[in-house]
Length: 127
Image 1 (cartoon, rainbow, N blue to C red):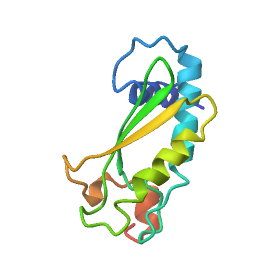
Image 2: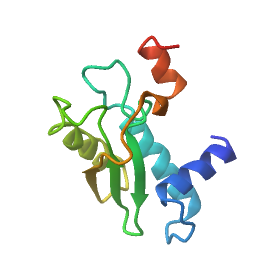
Image 3: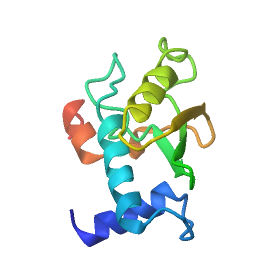
């Protein structure tokens, strides 16, 4: 993993903060593992994972290794709106070293296709 990616992951995991009781290397590993877990969750209507779709807005790992995730949906009326947060919570909770996970659905800012990575754009045929 490159230093730039590790730094970006740590910043995302801390919500931009830099004062964590978790050692930086462990925090980077946890963040990488959480991102990998999030990439196993797919919107059933779109052939791309929720991370690459840009549905994950924030990941916070506290000093006790509890994780809060803020995420959105492609549309408020998404047919799996009640289930997807549970899928995300289960995926994040499965990461070694994580004590608990909590997922909050947010709709501000609203999701737009511009949030998708190039990988997701290719998967949906927009690239």
